[in-house]
Length: 428
Image (cartoon, rainbow, N blue to C red; front, side):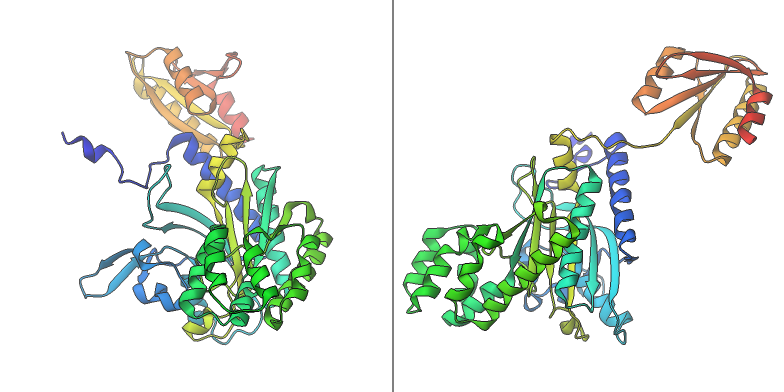
């Protein structure tokens, strides 16, 4: 047999048993936080027309997309980013809406990037989008939502780094960079390449203060009070307003009591050019990748026919799982699983029927219950080991027609009881 068919392609992986259960439990826990903030569900297709993600919309490089042709000749793309899909939906289904729209989702994204250090090309995101609210209060609420979600996950130590896309765009306008130069310097600043930034800036005839800001931009991170001085070094009204918005944002987040979880990075930029204002990422120990990405995209919906400001966030569930594991933060699944085990060597028909009666009674009460037939080549200890492996806390073993043994998997205590009495107890 070709062994290749047992393996997954590079960049994707199987998730099963305890890990999968923990991932789904984590998603559900964080989803409940989104619902507490009043968000409503939306699902978008896993693939879209390629035009949804074209370069002009500010999405990622098309070389990082999985593209294919359908039988009608349309070029389709596995979604690398869920935000443009939601922007399309809002423009279509909420065209006349004028009050804020709150949407949340769970879905997988697909990015055909370079594989290094096990980086996944398919990842699960849980996200929220707040549309038709252009206020700094909305910015603060989305960052507060991010922090509440991370606290709910069990993390204690993390930082949400906040930047301002408009600050950089204001500097670019003041320096009169063309589009190519702006993109070059964006990449260099994002990668903290001071030498590359200096090479480009030194080749331009620009104001000394502006040159100093651009050279310092990769290092402008930390507490806000250490960064606001640059507001007086630029002539750009757009850049100054960006700093003033950060000041107001910090003021509101202190009212939430979340100031210890945030820091500011004026050199934070994004490969998604649709961001127009606040951008943010959350980091923690155990993973070099961001566990949350978010930001304001006030011009994206306009490209789909609805002029509406918006801000969103996406929690990268796979990266969060890695961080929790490496920090030894256990995801505790509060479920009681039960195994009904019946003997097939005795009066099998009557015992099987009693097992079915018992399992139906337990399931009708909402108990997660597995029904299993004991075979002759396995002893009871084998099934106890199976129960421990599968997080089963209790075994009901039927080897007689009228009685059942209730085995506590953790303590090995055994209690023998009549099946009729047990069924009555369950139904009570």
